Length: 196
Image (tube, rainbow, N blue to C red):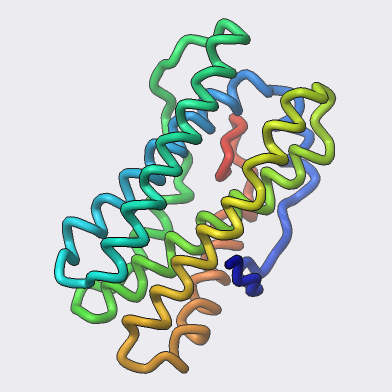
């Protein structure tokens, strides 16, 4: 079941979409890295919180799905003869992770909400690419991923609600992090990235 909640505060700028559509090969390469990182985030949480049975069960499935998405993006890289190579990361994810508070249970809450924000932004941007990509087959591929990204950000939000000592405070903290997330995207990164 997908839980649709308002997570991101500011929509993506048109300048990002123009930059992305003008550099689809580079964006695909970054997308491949993003899917792997998303699987890694889920696995890190599983290893950090092994006693949280619901989290372990649900994030194990999410990590599996993220790796399947990575394989699908890899197929596109092969199809377009794009070698899988490293890319310098924009400051987006590191900027969000710097806001994660260290004591528990705040660290778990913030980690889940940061993951929700990243997945929500992915959902929004994949929907934009599905709508505007000039390659119909690639647009269809992006559209196929939209629903799962919505499910992912909803899952992280529900886990935050489940494990927060005060479930009412979750949305207040999410608003603070979402404001910071919008500020991180206020200046367009010089190279297109899924999260830049």
